Length: 174
Image (cartoon, rainbow, N blue to C red; front, side, top):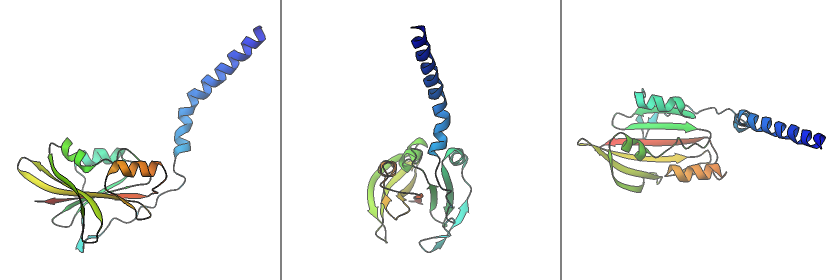
């Protein structure tokens, strides 16, 4: 009887140690099997030259934790934010959430097509008398696009969309 109890105790200890080590092994198993060669940042937007912009302090703090690359640029009128990533993440969230977090009121959210017939999610944001029009979309490696982060996340998580992905947000003064 003591021998059976000893075997159960040993088995329990082995399972306990394996469970303790599992979280340490998980990041290795979840690591991407490839290294993403990020494309060059865009040099123009709708025929207008882009000039890179430094990230604001709050954007830099976000970018430091973001599982990809974050870039800002301007074409002289609009501010564009490009977020490139190769893994599905909940850190890619709607621009409206960012604007709300900065104290903006969100107005007139809608889907729109641009001159190239691409579909975008757009809204107006207002704070202290300043208004901007914001449009965003996410495009995967195969050219499929998403107008909201949640549908992109689940498509990517379930293998229906494959990266790398690029999220583009365009803010235009009104």
